[in-house]
Length: 634
Image 1 (cartoon, rainbow, N blue to C red):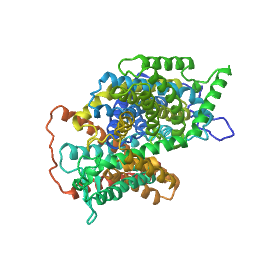
Image 2: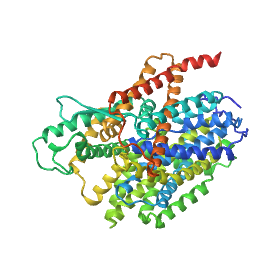
Image 3: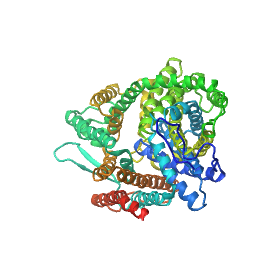
Image 4: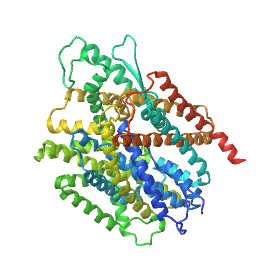
């Protein structure tokens, strides 16, 4: 193997040279990749329904892959591990595409069939892969020095330091056990309550609370203090400003003001949140998504121009391609895209028609170009996929309405188009990170692209069952399963189609997003904080605070990176452990296994003590990375 050499004035040489072949797309790698794609797809589906966010699975998958392939099967091919993490991210992307949109069908009481869900996510997933292939040379190779692809680069570093894979795998496993244990004790055996809140004295309906969920702690650590802080700012704006303000001005009113179902004087904080704040939050998220789209228009134009130029240069080049530069042939990419679009146009399972299929083709390619470039800068976890999906739904719903397709049929068709595009964007963003990892370690692009499609199929075939199980156990849209992004999509479509949206509240939220943007903050992150209960943002900011403290007390840059990575691995385990135990509890509830209805103890200090213990454990795991490093050198 050649060591990586990447100065700007020399040709880049990957970790595994192009003229060297190692086991890559093997049956063992595919089997493990399929299993992890299903596991992380289910975990991210639960997390996305809970808080409206998903997290990257590439690094945990790489670590688990090395622990299994190297530890159990004595396999020593970095390219096999790269294939496994590529397949696993397909599950994460399918989970995001599904839960950001499709729960709206459950909220409409339409009981979507498994065939419909599978068809939507598979077509969206395939389009995401196909449409990214022509962009690889431009974004991954030509802009190697300008687009860092943070998760892809970090994953490559994890793979290249595979000799530490056993220790890193233990970090993920430790987090998995801690997160799963707390989830089982809290929501399974109900030994303590998992939501603690308190009313602020002499401040009517001003409530602060916290959800006792290790997964949210892990999310906060991964996204960092800045994003977590802006999300909390949105939550505080909703629960310490807007809700008390509505309570004050509506205290003397005995009339019910739409869209709430009771007079304001009779509503508590949760009633006001449900009746008014969700609409304000929806308007804020919608406007923030549109602002994000406007800000990325220059990137969109450059992407289309550079993609066309790259394709033309590719056709004119007659030289043989190295192994590390071989994509799926463009003729097969074009044929695959055409087949998927035609099938979408005439498939009775979705009934989007030619207009819907053309919309998917146009918006899919345009936004895939944006998403693939944006994740190269901000990473997959911060990619504004929902904002681009909102823009798609707004335009498509308008087109369907003026074409005469309205009512339930029109709403379902608009949501279906949005779901296919959303899935394509999520898959394209994740495979962009994977291809960056492959470029750095010396993977074969066409094998990664094929692996991604295998992962799409594996996770796509089971994601419908996961959604059904979670809906039957917790009910979509309830406090236990908010499905915030899907509720937002549903609200927008209904408002466009039926004219029944609370437009004053929507416009108020939109104005808030504009003000936030002028303040120099990330309007989309703050808007999500407004939309969600503050109870969700509180544990996230605690995770972000742990990350800030680790950085603040670690002056050495190399040690800071080591500690951050150790914490990220443990935090990823917290997320995976809690999320998967949440799915298991849902399965038990659906199967009729008796689950206690109320917690054994209502004492909030017990719940807070449990959360504090996990927080201190995360701090300890990250801080002790220095001693691990010292011991590894001895």
